[in-house]
Length: 420
Image 1 (spheres, helix red, strand yellow):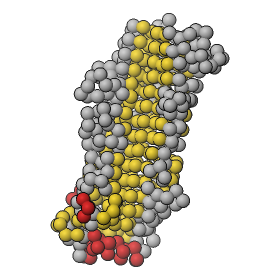
Image 2 (tube, helix red, strand yellow):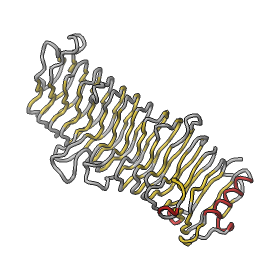
Image 3 (cartoon, one colour):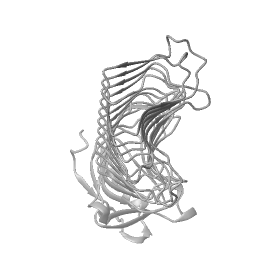
Image 4 (cartoon, one colour):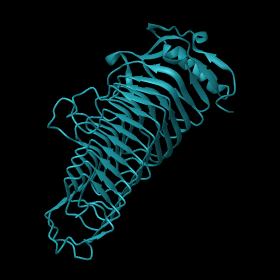
């Protein structure tokens, strides 16, 4: 039976009292059990604050629905709450919508475990937990087709965390707002997931000073993640962090406003998009990077622990007011195409560069156009040729600054304007 079919089971009809002090867990569970036994339907949580002393499991074909943020599920404080999660999902065709999960430091809002599929989490407010949503399933029982939409994550240590042991496919995170965080808003922590799409969300300033922030989106040893159409505002450390040999990551049409630097310490600059540790085939396309005061690096790609990456593409982006628009340290076979860079200290910077293509970029009102340094004695002259073609530099103080060993850092310049 469809999760939208069947009767409506009002938890107050089973004795649940929403006064914030009476333990309502057993009564809510009775409504859930009755709904599940009938083959599915809607368990309705009216306005009120419903205290629970341990986790509630949402089984297959059960739709848990409230009246928005006025329908509050409140885990008991401290040790009065048994377990680590407020809700657990483990079946197919279920949903949790239109609720607020109240604060309880150290608890997970929704723990998605093995066997969960076709799950909808919509318009849920997560407050002040260690994690809002956790993918924490046994890899022998993959999670499939989860939609997390229109949710709010307030002061969550991790807004959404994919554990390293979890496995699955098909996760959409869309229309959500993340704010007042102190750690990673979304962290894909070496999970064996494919088809993760992070689309049309708002990521707001962390509560800390910037030097101890986490990342808005952290991607570690992941494949096929798409981050698109999001708005990142005031993320003082890194808006997107890609590491640990991640591959085939798409960063498309996002807005990064005043990101990648400390608001309180003018000497602290970070990166907006940071790609390290052997990651390959990251495409950064049609994004807007905008800072004031020439602070922060828009895109950084580099080695970590001696592990180089390759085959990144940076194209059709605009960079304004950055310390550096894009920095490449030792990443090979990368393309920088049709980017527009204005009012930055440096346009393109890098260290030990080889096999790069800089094509059709426009750089204006910058101190440096291209600033490359570092001898590279590990590669042959065939491997190290860099191509600069059809770039336009206007009002750039130093178009090309380099200490490269010309015997190892051959370059080809074709039809550029303002580039010596």
